[in-house]
Image (cartoon, rainbow, N blue to C red; front, side, top):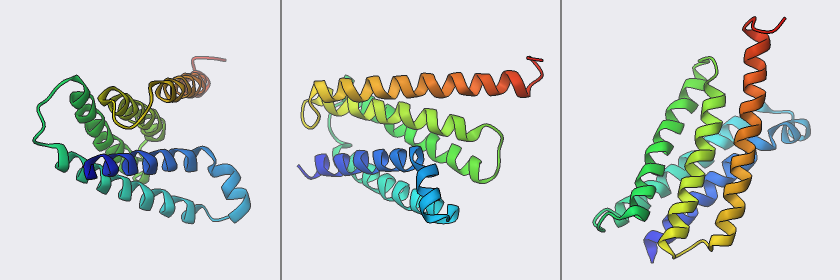
Length: 156
């Protein structure tokens, strides 16, 4: 179905932006142009948002069940991710941490949505993606808490 293709393309593009940001230091060492990396991230994320809107618009008339509700929840998280990305560009403190963590959560929900709908993603692949996303989120949170402790005067 065309709606499934839109959803898979959106998920692939969101995953691509996540990988781009995970590898940004290596890419920056190679190309030495931070603005190029930011523009690529924004362009890929905008395309992902477009395909996500097309996916939701295609399936908007389907009856709501748990699988579809998870898809709507992940679309709402994608909107919040967009807001936190804009907040980062406006230099709000700690917005990048929330942007990354919410991105992981949104992508994970999208994978669960797709796997539970039984159309696109096998459960074994969904489990691998979810375990990786969970460990990444826990690692980033531990680093963030460590920064808060040292920067906030909690640790001497």
